[in-house]
Length: 356
Ligand code: NAD
Image 1 (spheres, rainbow, N blue to C red):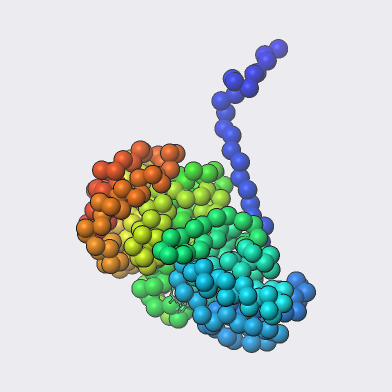
Image 2: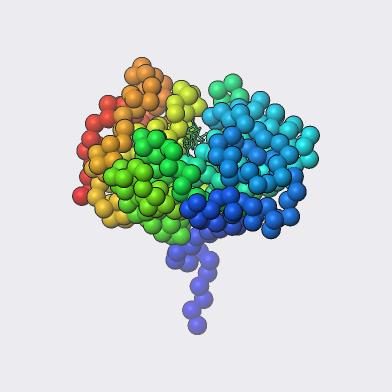
């Protein structure tokens, strides 16, 4: 009999955690789905986070509403919203808005434990992760805690129709970045990669439809579906090189979230692809071509210069990113590599690598 010792085992081994939440997808059904969830959860005192789309919560017993939402969840805003939740004795938070709004609801859930029903109106994907973020004095702190994972996500593509096309495309590219980075992020596994590949297919197809017919629902629906897959993959796989770069740029220079992700993504893909050929092949197949050509088709803004980053900041940015580079990145990235990558992204030139 052959005895296999632990040291001899060299086969595949991985761990995947699936986060538990209910997803209700229905175009034009947000108000009905939210009302059904409030009933199912037995909630009596709803605190609404976000001022947009009041029709979604119009039929509920709302005890208070946090209308003022700013980007990156300033700590002072979180404290104010937590005080409102305590004073109103809220037993459910219903957030209606983009990633900033979902983020504010998560900040309340983090300290109060009050559950969240999230109604996203962009493609940022925060609703499907257990990650929270807070900002104080230009420093962003993030963490993972299952209390902030919305118990239910209510997707209604009709709510995204009012997103201006440029913002819809940048937000969709932010979701594409979740997928691409999930292919090599530190905790990536085959399930994340399968979700990411299907996410890329849905997002690239959906965004092409959004560009061709900005008022049409089908493109918004496919993009919203892809945004959910992207966020589930990202939540499990963690932050890869792309997210580390964008986190530093957003925090240090206050750059707009979705536009920064859009600008950086083609350059991280071009940098990592030669060292991750299987991931690159799957990404290219799911995109139906190379990423830069898709950007051309979509008219996506792909220059860091356009996000407001000063050229003089690039060297400092490369220094700041260096300690955050994941050791598991497919290709080692030193300071000069990062500066080259950031400079190319700032110039917005077509990256040299292309599989297609
Ligand atoms: P956002 O929520 O700040 O929204 C961007 C702009 O779009 C805002 O002016 C908002 O009012 C407007 N808007 C939103 N929905 C609209 C609609 N349907 N029609 C018209 N205008 C609309 O931006 P975002 O890109 O959705 O989210 C970015 C934030 O989310 C960042 O702070 C980011 O860190 C966070 N985020 C967190 C996670 C996570 O897992 N925790 C994941 C992704 C993003």
